[in-house]
Image (cartoon, rainbow, N blue to C red; front, side):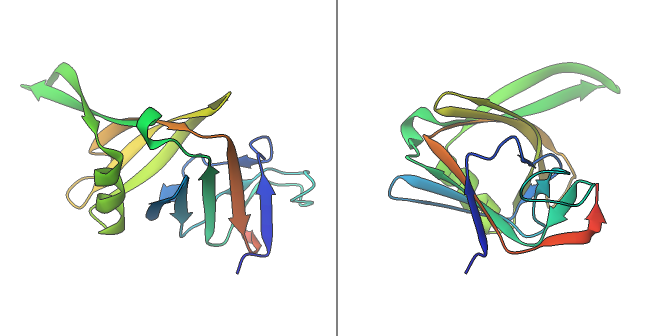
Length: 159
């Protein structure tokens, strides 16, 4: 199904401004689907174009995924009379996050990604049916490897 599959290619691929449209956890893996693809950086072995370009529909798969050590937090800003009063943090079960994404109730958009040993930390925003970036989020994925899947790069979608 996928023409390209690379493992642990964080130096070649960025998920900045990429929106997750589907999520599936099974056995010891977590897959996230991006209908609008992700970015492949310029002048790499996977993109000979001199500019960073978007892929077509793509997927990332976290292998040896440990759901017990992974976490998703929502951050909501509270205002009174137009001034921010405080921000609250709420832990959301990952199964609930997958359900909301797959039902189309939420789209999560990645803004930042930090890779560590057996962990990936994401920051971004959650868009609901009522509001764009209704919440900020922090997501920690505990896994051994990340696999990136896509078919084609889109030269018409430059950074």
